[in-house]
Image 1 (spheres, rainbow, N blue to C red):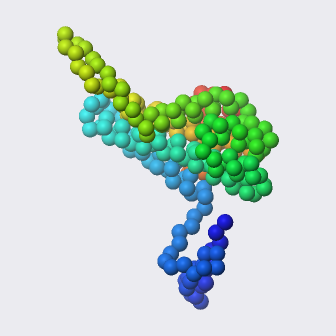
Image 2 (image 1 turned 180 degrees about the horizontal axis):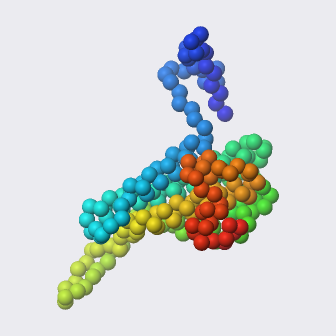
Image 3 (image 1 turned 135 degrees about the vertical axis):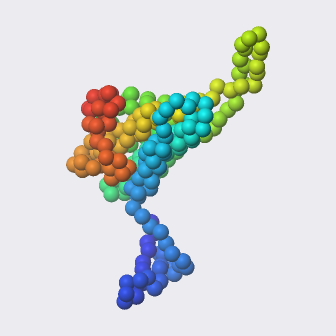
Length: 230
């Protein structure tokens, strides 16, 4: 783990900065790990807020909503993965659990980490989490389709004419503000359920990682599911 030391002047300004005992040139930028996760979720909510509601199915508003919705969707999922990786890496360091660190820093898929990290860290899996894992797999499959698009030509016929070379474009889904908001809530629910299962007494556990005021109870209520599992 890199170690930084500051050599300060009498006025408190940094005269020199050392990394692992070596003088470095220029400035450094250090921040708390949870702020990395917060950045993604803050971007998600801001893009949702930028979406508008109204009748303009094929105009500029629809294109703008698709842009904002796609950004919100992707940032929600990136934030979830960042949370799992960073939170359990920190926890593994704190409790001396190398197997937790290994899994948190691995390339295993999201549902594998969600299934196994709580078990390794807390001694038991998330209660009734099978459907939550399946939901995250569904969202990440959609993400894969977006970031690794494949063109499958389609044709359409009407008025006796055949038109070929079109594609079934799933991006239109992201023009739906409620879909993007629901995706964000599912992602925040992962954080909330981890907080509950960890035994955290922080009422602001979700906020600490996302800068969004939600709880397991409020998110479960929004999504229409029991607060103790799905």
